[in-house]
Every structure is written in C-alpha cells, then in structure tokens.
Image (cartoon, rainbow, N blue to C red; front, side, top):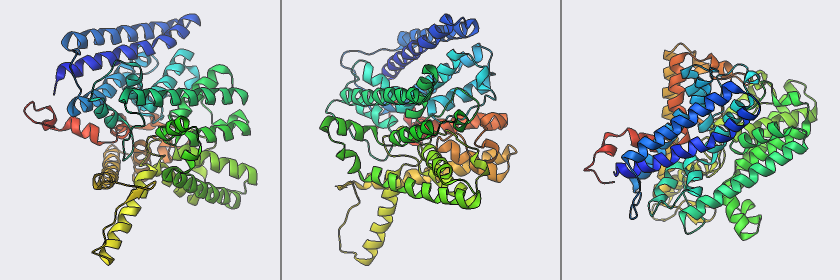
Length: 487
C-alpha cells in the first residue's frame, strides 16, 4: 500500500472538513454566539493543522493511482478522522464531554441520528447546523462528495466508490467515476433543495426547514427541537416528511439514470424499489389497522402515524411523530422489521437493504430448484439482469455478518448491565443506523441513558454499519498493512 497517496488524500479530506465548518462559524459570529464562534475557529485550526501534517508526510504525484488497499484505507481512515475532528465543536464549546462528543459526531456522520443530548434547544444555532451538516455529509458519503469536487483520483477511484457506497452491487451510470460522483451529488443537492422548499411551504421557518431537509434526505434524523414532529401540529408536514423519507430510501443512481433518460418509468421499473414500496405499504396498512383497533385511533390519525413511522424507520431516518414505544405489540413487531430491512441499495438509508432481501429469497428458491432439477442451469436475476455468484454470496455473507454483529453488540451491552430486551433493541437500531428504538433507546430518548462503555462500543458499531462492515474489517486485518502482500 502506498501510504504517501493515502496521507495525501486524507489531507484533502481534512481540509474539506475545515471548509465545511466555515458556515457554522459565520453563523456563530454573525449572531454573537461567541462560544460557538471560538469552538469552530479552534476546530478549523485543528483541521488545517492535520492537513498540514498529512501533506507534509504524503501527497499525490502525476502518475499515482489508487489501488484497492489505498481505496479501503482512504475510505475507512477518512471516515474515522473526519468523525474525530467533527467532535471538536461540541467539546471545545463545553456543551458535551469528550465521550458524548465522540458519540454525537459518529452518530451524525454515520446517519444513525441517535443523540446523547437531553435538551437540544439550549444549543446555539451554529451547533445545531453542524449536527445537521454532519448528517448531510455522511448521508451520501464523505468520500463520494469529496470525489465530486476534488481532483481526479485516477483509475483506482472505483475502489473508493466501492468501499463507501451501499448495497450488494456497485454500478456506475457514467463512464468516468468522477462524473458519476458529480451526478449523484447534484441529485443529492437537488432533492435537499426541493425538500427544504417543501418544508418551508408547510410552515417551517427557513433555518428549521434547511436543517430538517438535510437530515431527511441524508436519512440521519437529527432535529433542532426536543419534541416529536407531531408537536408542530401540521398534518401536511408529516405527510411531506414521509414522502421525502421514502424518496431518500430509493437508489440515487436510479434517480440519476431517470434524470439522464428523461423518464420516471425507470424508477417504477426497478424491481428493488417496487418491492420496497409494496413492503412499506403492507406494513403501513397493518400498523394503521392495529392502531385503529387496539388504541381506538381515528382513521386519518392512524393512517398518518403508520405511514410516517414506516417511512421513518424503513428509511432509517428515525424521525418520531408519536411515542411508538407505547404502540401495540403487532405494530412494534412490524416497526422492528422495518428497521432491520432498511431502504434500497445506493440510497442514503441504512439497514440490510431490500436488494439483499430479494437476493436471499431468490437464492433459497434457486437452491430448492436445483435440488429438484439438478441438470437445469439457472441464475439469480435482479431487475431482469443475471447476477454473478459473487454478488449473491456477498448478500448472504453480509446478512450473516449483520446478525453476528447484532448479537455481539447486544452481548457487550448485557455485560455492561443492560437487560436482554433493551440490548437487542439498541443493537438492531444501531446496526441499522436508525437511531430511536424501543425501551432504553425509545422513541423519545437516545444514547444518553447508555453506560459509558456501551457508548464507546456504539461508536465502533456505527462505524462498522455505515461502511457496511467489510471495509472496516479489512482495515483491522494484519495482512492489509503488510507491505509484501498483494491485494
């Protein structure tokens, strides 16, 4: 692995992180938030100092190309470094201790959206903006956004894109990787802008609309108020938020293709997105009926609550309209299923991804068919295209890894004094990047009730979850750092 290339590109990332802190600094300075301005000024200085040290050690030369090991290292170490630098405003301003600052930063950039802050309304606007920005940058991907605006990475840029993008398949819609990243970024910006405008038309002020738009499209879920969305008293806003959360659960690559072809038919011909819509429709109907029957909720209120929470949990955004911890058992079961499911591959949503669920069912059906007809040659297909065995087996391996890590994180928390049910709930919610869950990490609470050791472990599992496990596991492999090994 060429460590000079890795250090050079990490230096660019830390410089970009410092540049991203300028808007909150300007906001703090212009609104006389002196503590916030000082915290962001220190943060920017630390980003610049880190950039200087990295560029002193490394840098890019004309013929440099990023290989698979460099791609994995830049993605994994880049996320880790940015998340650590991202904690400085919280800690330097005195709003959180170091551990809670670390958790808040990891939760923001990973898109988990679970907070350790009991009262976000006491925070200055600059910090609230930074929380939302951390969600937004982490949603599409720190490195993908950087690739859209940074110099050409060379032939190895594909390795970086593969290391950060989500889902069982990593396809590009344009010949050049940078053009592909720019296309995805433009779709991301356009959807965020449309979402902010829609929220403003629904009655939110400009600052709140922009913040909620960033965390909606990023499916992160950080907010600027303590209460639930229902406290706005605006049914139109709830339906609007549900719509954009569902949109954000779709593949951004799919939207890019639809835009380039000038046809929305591309979206509804996509097998994964159609399956996702069917699943969330069934879940919303079941939950609405359950709320109407068991809790005697009025029909419109039951429908609105079910649609909102199914959209929120399946997209792993984590916005809350009501305390669903008080919902009937059947509703809770379906909500937990939505958390585990997640959105579509190539979206900003977390979770297992609908594409992998489809592949796993088709894989099982293929095995059964081969047992019945050993001489028949058949393949697993998705959206009419035959997939390589590596893709199918990759989905199975990822499912296995998620289950193992869910159990492991739950076991760690039980060792730290959390009971079994709460440990499972927090584990599933964290690994799916949802944020809210049931029990100790309920709809109206977060990580603030977790013991310190569990909080620290949560950072690691959020990191694993956002980079879909194997990128991080590769970094932890001793052979990855061995100079004589070829990858």
